[in-house]
Amino acid sequence: MRLFAAIDIPDDVKAALDTFQSRLRSTAKLSWSPVANLHITTKFIGEWPEARMGEMTRALAGVSVTGAMEIAVKGIGWFPNPSRPRVFWVGVDGGEPLRALARATDQAAAGLGVPFEERPYAPHLTLARIREAVPLEALHDALRTPPAGTGFDFGAFRASRFFLYLSAGGKYTQLAGFPLE
Image (cartoon, rainbow, N blue to C red; front, side):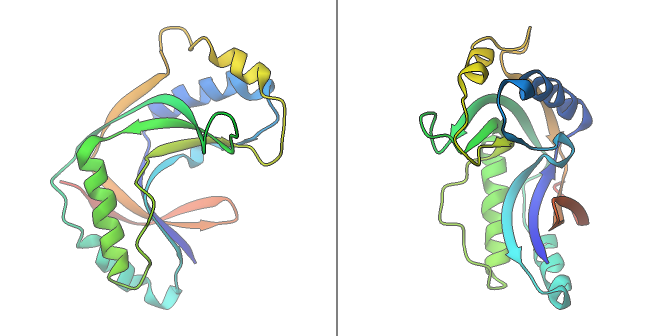
């Protein structure tokens, strides 16, 4: 079982992202992410034995957090960089509370033998992946002007829960939820 811990995105933010993505889809042949699948990953766990699911659920249930957090979804960018892009993303700003949750979920999973994440936490929503070299000029042209009135700001919300997810065949299934308050 492939698992990860994440915060869900509310429907109004997903709707804004869907409108944005729909506007861009025809500008480049990218592997566009289904907006319904977007989430803010706090820890990618990876392969985990089904027989040990209770252990992981208990570990995440024990994550100590300071309460619900305000999260803004805004800005756009490229990984690893704009000149050699592999991922087109929208930024996520949850400040120190989100970084603390990511550290806590990383630590909880590490207590069960999952390797610590070595890269710095960079919360984002993957809008598209670039799997092969494709022309991006039309996409770059479309991005020069943010959608009317948005300035690449897709909304904000208060996260009061995070979830353990199963990833199978491009489909994500919630297995357990954990309150942040």
